[in-house]
Length: 480
Ligand code: DUC
Ligand code: ZN
Ligand code: ZN
Image (cartoon, rainbow, N blue to C red; front, side):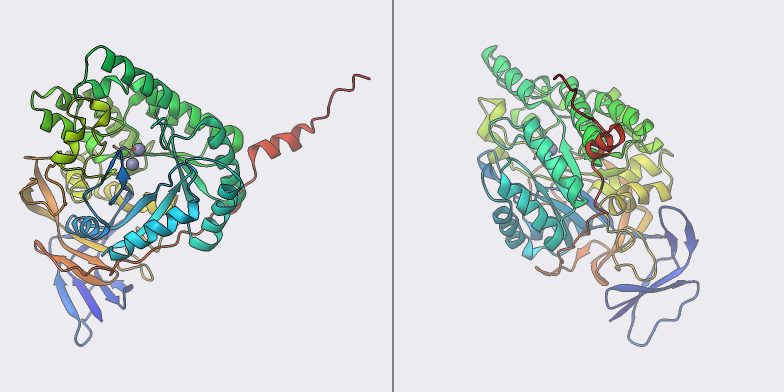
């Protein structure tokens, strides 16, 4: 089946051109001006619009079992909401319980994700360590197309990876040609501060950001970066929310280290005043980690994106409804952490990034799809409108506008952190795997249309430790 997108401007991360785009059997087969529609082809009029790679959200948690409940958005509803917002692929997370075999957890998540209607892939979290984890990391990279391993430096007593686990996992990733990623917050410090705040009678959501100060993120970011430096593994820091962490990334990159950083749409636009709202439901709905920050951190994050010090944008889409958030009514540490955004990221970034002149439309493509595809090794199959690439495309109408609201969004959650925000710049059509899945406000999705996308490993890397050892030819001191 073919599809012709006519009359638009094709926008990639490096250039734009006036061109039509012809799609056949899920792949882009021609890009040039004045293409004729083959017999039977569906034609999309993209006059006055931009034809861009579909968004890739590298950080979602569909139906995540977490903090005693399960995220309300499943792989079908979540990928459908993504398509409604112009995002055609997500990278979600397999998160094994401590001592759970990695392959066990991976197979569970693969089962859950079969109903996805857009393409997806998985980072796999390393939450504990033994020989089986070493072996399973190899199987995941070599047989399952997993090239990224996640490490939670927070959530003590649950999924937190101690430094020993980080060392072992980072070292194994080097051998396998994988990239490591980290949620950077000092979990011990957060745990102690939570205890202290509760003892002081600070039981409400206003205590949440106090228990997770910027320094806790800066410290963990620096620790992850320094471990990665010594071991010699590329590192991707998820949801960078503070200037503290950003400064560590900038320093490391200036020294030539392969460190990447991700900004969340929420962290770019929502500040920590939400936690002091008198209504528990409203404040709790914003509880996610790392928390929303003071405004000066937002300004730093925007500059990080503009300068290329942060390369990607994501959402950490992890939905909990009011009844779930109420689990922490008397104890803020029990509020399930997570907020939504997979549907809104593109429109919010266009409105506050491109329309304000902070980002060009090409930079918008870079930070919403191309850089993620590059970093996670699926470029240019994904993240580029090019002949031979997957036909994952958003036709973007820069004049369309709406007011974001939980009442009208497609996300399976009763709250929207961008509630009331006017956005200008929206998808008119979303095409995934060559098929029209969203048209002028209407979704046309089927469970199971999404495909699992394997991400090949990078060249196996040399461990910095081995290189240093070779260069210095260390010999024991003879004390005989
Ligand atoms: N942070 C959240 O807010 N939710 C899920 C996991 C995480 O790290
Ligand atoms: Zn996280
Ligand atoms: Zn997350």
